[in-house]
Amino acid sequence: MTELEVFTTSNRSLGTITVPSAGTVKDIKVKISKLQQKLKITRQSIRNSIKGKDIKDSASIASVGLKDGKVYVKDLGPQISWSLVFLCEYLGPLVVYLIFTTRPWLFYGPSNNFQPMSLTAKIAAACWSFHYAKRLLETIFVHRFSHATMPILNLFKNCSYYWGFTAYVAYHTNHPLFTSPSYLQVVMGLAIFTLSEVGNLSTHLLFRNLRPAGTSVRKIPKPDGNPFNALFNYVSCPNYTYEVAAWIGFSIMTSCLPAAFFAIVGWGQMTLWALGKHRNYRKEFSDYPKKRKAIIPFIL
Image (cartoon, rainbow, N blue to C red; front, side, top):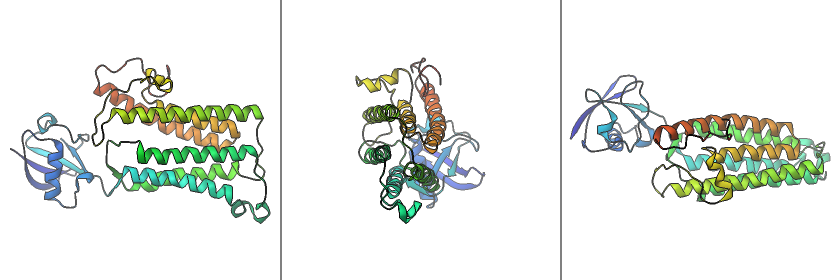
């Protein structure tokens, strides 16, 4: 058995715990939760120093490098499940957009109650609804999360982003003065959007098959024969590549500036995520393909 003194990241001692020498960081969390009932396992981030980085639950105590029998814990605050956050942030855009589509008089005045929608506006509404319905179904049936929870504040931040942008885009694409671009532009944008959505789903299914249910196992993602997954030969996060491409297609199809702005902001955020995951892959796997980029083949 190993005896450890537990400190907060503000260097305040919480007491002493005893854990199996051959145990894992998860065992440390269990003991701390008994020592401090407020610190549920999901609220804890275990570090080997005050300014150290979060250590995975699966790491062995022997490999952590705890010095002088000390371990540090950071309180991550109230938590909420990843799946619940995803369901809330994706349900909102589906509902908000359809309110603009089916109740236009609420936003444009009573005279627009029976204003006919253009075919392009109807296609845009169908694409937007399909995308977020797909995301909801993926959250329920496809995604396997490596972490059970996230800080509860993320719920409000994420919902504000998705719901707010939806209202911004929907106001313009459903506006009575919305002007449809050329037929060729609509068809081209719709084709890009549709193919990208299929590609995005394909990558999510591949990621799901890499991780057995109930585990946080990580493996190198590789093409599985699905032609859409050939993009794994070139980037680490093709799901983000397809996601960005889908919104570019939507922007082309609608010729809507707010939609283009949404695509640009989303591209920026997903690039940061992709770069982080790409670095982690290269750090974790010594045989990780060196020619892969993070999100844009051959470039980034």
